[in-house]
Amino acid sequence: MLTQKMRKTKSALRRRSPCPVSCALEIVGDKWTLLIIRDLLLGMNRFKEFIASPEQIPTNLLSERLNRLLDNGIIELCPAPDGTRHQAYRLTDKGKDLNATLTSLKDWGLRWERGTRVLREKRN
View 1 (cartoon, helix red, strand yellow):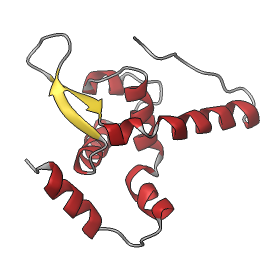
View 2: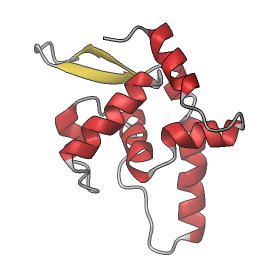
View 3: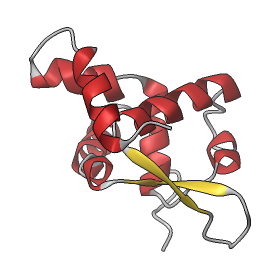
């Protein structure tokens, strides 16, 4: 498994541009990645919970996106909160910093895209 320092170095080597917007989009700039981050912010933390989201992400894409988020220090593995042997995912501080971005996207969608609504609120 890659250490956090190795992950950061690996990520920096793949950059196409020093532009911060471009770098951020290379990591989180697709639909599925942002929806996974949304679900983590809403309290989901297990692979099976992400699969159950209404958007129905294919399992191969979910695995790839979770690995990308791990490689870039957005999420980390942790013991499952229910005490089972399974592992769960949680946002790192870097990942939690995306909350404002997703809130802005949600607000924009509610304002400008007719028929949208918040599907679920954050779990405690």
